[in-house]
Amino acid sequence: MRTTPPIQVDKMDIVQLRSWAGSRTDRRLAQRARIVLLSADGLGPTAVARELSCTRQTVMSWRERYRTLGVTGLLDATRSGRPTSVNPTDILLRTLDPPPVGFQRWSSRLLGAELGISNASVASAWREWGIRPTTHGGWRLDTDPALDTDVTRVLGLHVVAGSGAIVLERGRPVPGDRIPVARRQDVGELPDHGDPSCFPDFEDGAIAFLRSLPPGGARHPRVIIVAGASPWWRRLDRRRGQTIHVAGPGRPWARLVRVTSLMAGAHPRGTTSVAHLCAALHGCDPDAAFSWSELERRLEPNPPR
Image (cartoon, rainbow, N blue to C red; front, side, top):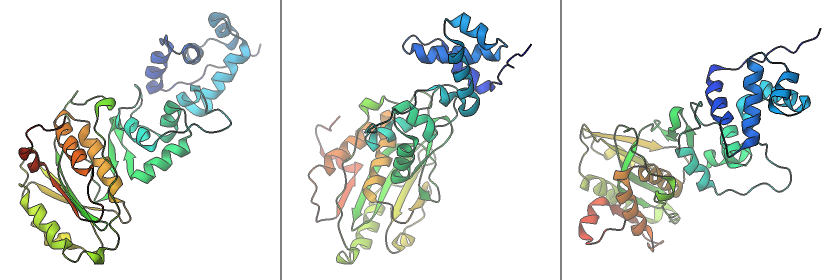
């Protein structure tokens, strides 16, 4: 007598499948998860179909989807026709959240299924913003050397003519030290200041700006991300508690500022500094250099929240 062998289920997948199987909001996904779990326990397609009150063909289809695509194959595929439009910022914000239970990191296919868009759209947004997801919901900013750290506050920003420096405070991740996506601050686009040769005094101004900021300490070191057509940052003092990262070539400063600010805005301590940066960017002169420091907040009687 011909029998259908049980399917092999990865131990990490079992955690996710059990979570989906208990869902009361998505009954179709719950049924698919139960099909895989029962099949892994050794029940044949006919017995599973009888247990879940569905057809044998339904059981066979979802068994095969799991066997070829894994747990992501149980999610609804993107519908044909005009693709769903999702703001790249929404993709970035979702990337900042931890992946579903049972997954160590986001993949473009997993996040695309989560947002109802194609994995190509997710991958394109990641490339555009210069980020790479890492394990446990972390991500790596596209800088050289790689900046893989927990940004907790934006301390200063100086940018002009496509060159600039952004100063961040970093600290060790604290469990639960996150705020909901809806409450995170956003940062507007910085204008394009044109040809760097029009600003011959930029290097001296940027260095003076960075030296005006206090150095970092052992507990909360400073991270300085710099970029520019010439290696002006080599004139900076390598003080204790500071690390200088050089942004990759062609990395737009507007996106770099938005990404790092969103990182800081995900922490309670960083929300105030990001809100101040948003307020400073609002209405800034597009034809002049932009400089901002968290030290300026002392001059404001009612800081934005």
